[in-house]
Image 1 (cartoon, rainbow, N blue to C red):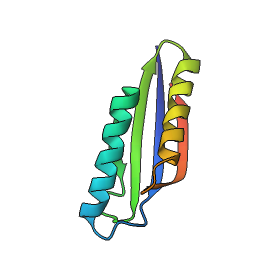
Image 2: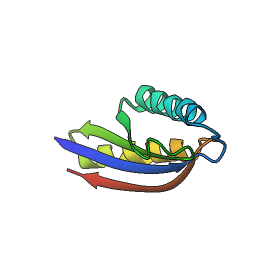
Image 3: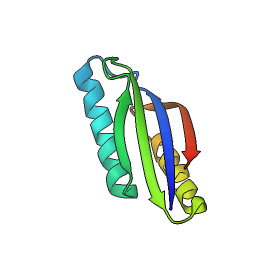
Image 4: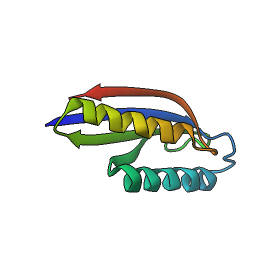
Length: 93
């Protein structure tokens, strides 16, 4: 069993309040959970309006498959119009 773990840092320049940020983040989290069956949660920058850190985890029987899933998730995050990918870090366990 292989666990792929990723931390994603996002910038949300359109957010003018925590409410705006939550709307964008919740939508993205729901989309990633539904589309990729991944565990996704906000893990940092909770009180900052225009910044967000997400933790993503996928489980697979092959490292290549887990890596493909995480790469697809990065691609989806990059296509997000209201949040911009600043940085990401992938680790296989």
